[in-house]
Length: 154
Ligand SMILES: [Zn+2]
Image 1 (cartoon, rainbow, N blue to C red):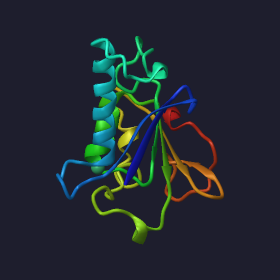
Image 2: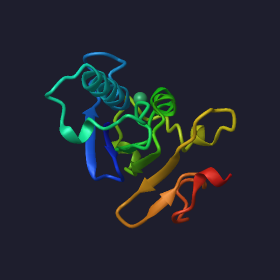
Image 3: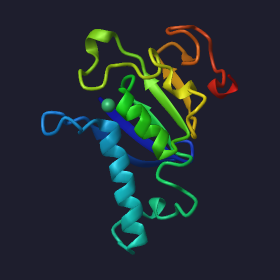
């Protein structure tokens, strides 16, 4: 699985990661990328000069506030909750046939569990499914053909 975090609607690439579960069962791409975001923020606060100038302005950001995340597949529950805690704004998932999915992150947090729609969570984010032919909002039954609706409206 791969994860890419961007800010300013994709104008600035923040970080990316690819799962490395052979080195640790917790090295899921989402977890690794959020950890990298935290490291970037810490380095900026510590005055580290090697941080990309585009990433130095995050005064209002708490971890991934107002960031978008692109995923190569539906995340597992652990990664989906990490995205809640990160305060990410939107998640975009590239649909793949199930036989091409990586094994470490395939319990389909949004498709099966509707995690992003749980009313008791203190942060919500939009989830979009991307395919070569359309964009689908995941608050509909998967794989619906509904296009561009806001999942926060439910
Ligand atoms: Zn995961």
